[in-house]
Every structure is written in C-alpha cells, then in structure tokens.
Image (cartoon, rainbow, N blue to C red; front, side, top):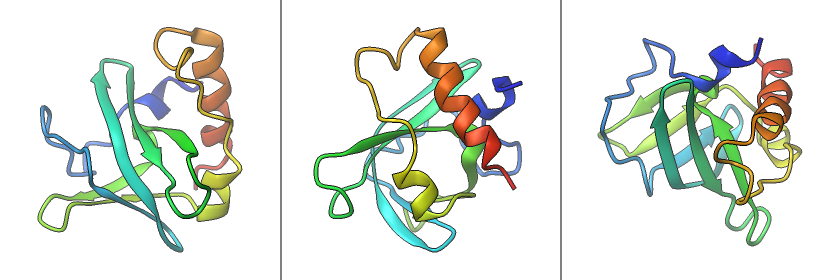
Length: 116
C-alpha cells in the first residue's frame, strides 16, 4: 500500500539526476525547511529535510510521493502536507532510512494516511 508513496508523481516536475540539495521545501501553509539529501532509488525515492528554525537540528524523511511540484527556477519543492503534519512525522533515523523495510513502512504509512 505504501509503495506508491516512494515515487515521484509524473506531473511533479522531477528531473531524474537533478541535484535537489538546498532547495526550499514549501508545505501547503508555508516554508518548512531545506533539502539536506535526496535519493532517487527505484521504489524508494525520498528527501531528507532539515527543519531548521522550526525544530533546531531535526530532520524528516519525506517520501517522493508527497511532492506536488518542483520549481527548479525558484529552487523550491512544494509538498502536499501541512507544516504540522511534517513536524509530527515519525522521527528520522539515519541508521534505518536506507534498507530498513519496517522503518519505510512506518514512514510511508504515516504519509500515506495524510495524502489528500
């Protein structure tokens, strides 16, 4: 059920191989942070977002399926989530975000339940 959450929507404007590090992330109700890292792995594409001033030192893992639109000219990524939904997401775990199926199910399930 959560597999589709890990891929970019065809109309999101994602260009394979593009460097998204440093892009500002915009929730539906305002800016939330900047991309610290991203991956384009088949079936496991995601952004790691530094929430910056919102919660000092906190990072979140956003599955690519949460991305509504990427504006490469403005270096902004618009996601289909509110700032509160992002702040309340499961804690980012650097040790588990690559290859841990249970962690991906947890994160994917959270965001799948908040899709509009």
